[in-house]
Length: 189
Image 1: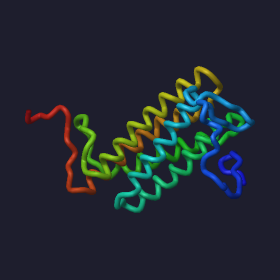
Image 2: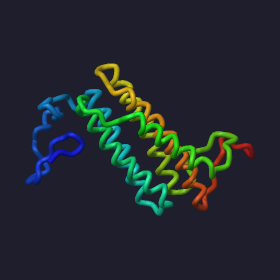
Image 3: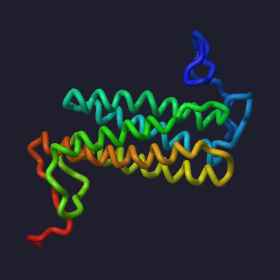
Image 4: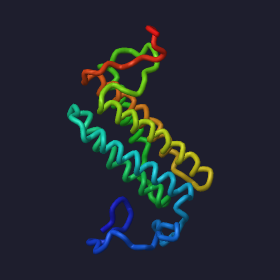
């Protein structure tokens, strides 16, 4: 069975393989790479981002927000597959355009920003802020990786736009909770 262009066995008898015990891991094409190389760093940051988005999804969310995040989780798996196997082309400009359209749609219901806001606003919004910060780190890791090997230029753009989208979701989630956004600087201090 192939998932995201990566081969997976139909049934794993053991979750551990012991093949990574010496600080290397396998990638498609029977490649072995150090676990601290830029490629694995980028893959790990994208995986962490997907996990934090899962934490956002554990909250009670508006249907359109939850549906958007599940779609993004699937796309992040495609993005990771492409990072692990640069011969694949899974990230396309249409993905970026779709995020921009979603940003515009969600932003229409929000008040205009007059200052920066602190990363809080209730549990779901706070976890979404964490996802946004991890997304920025994933973007930086992909940029660093692009200095070592060829990377689809749509990938860092997608991650950049995704962090913008997550910021807008933070504002939506804060507005849907009993926690108001906290401006910075605090005009009352």
